[in-house]
Image (cartoon, rainbow, N blue to C red):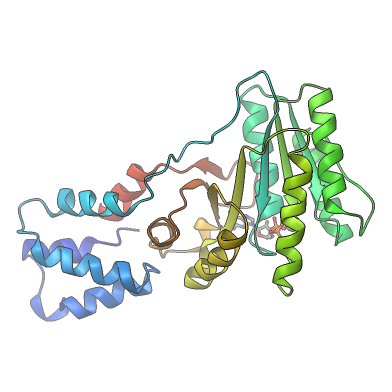
Length: 280
Ligand SMILES: Nc1nc2c(ncn2[C@@H]2O[C@H](COP(=O)(O)OP(=O)(O)O)[C@@H](O)[C@H]2O)c(=O)[nH]1
Ligand SMILES: [Mg+2]
């Protein structure tokens, strides 16, 4: 993922001038899913760097493009339940990420509850129940085709009654009817908030879908108040640029990175370490 190595060589003047035209370098950034605006800005910036310490200069520039909001999870203290709502398009990795989050918080000593809010597919409820057994975390579910808001409400009530530390709610992601989906997500949010505030609304984006994933994310973030991104399938892409594009274009901090199908393939996003990898 040393995305900027050729650009750095060009700035240092150590590359073969024929193989490193600025326009070729820009194309390479585009192919790494950096997006047109940021790719072009990087090249303009690079032209101004004088070869002294291109890594440091690019690091400063790229840092300024990252979202300035906190990349940490904003959970309530130990006195009340923290609630996390997980949203996104089907297949991006929502249910898997709900289980990964549950396992993360459980292993750091919290009591955790998961809610199967994708009531539209029986398989989705079973999938979460299977995860629940595997990581030993209880799952609240309702009837098939039932109201996801009522499942979420039941889960929120139980979490409060039992003093659960972290409640994580899975949702459906059918995009074929955008207004229905957004209406439904808003209802889930409203109903849960009758019991306790929602601390985080995390949008799941599949890194392998590149600019298309970014477009989906824009639709969601226009309708739901998204507080953070879970970027999944980073193991399936060599195109490291998508995380930068998300932060720069959406203005939403990436909070978690998924790197595989197992519950441990998951970690908090570290912006500085990520930039250092791109610039190594
Ligand atoms: N390689 C890889 N696969 C993932 C990751 N996260 C989820 N998946 C897989 O993506 C597929 C869809 O995941 P799922 O959680 O069912 O998506 P949902 O429809 O959004 O709930 C499943 O096969 C998961 O195992 C990840 O970080 N890396
Ligand atoms: Mg699912």
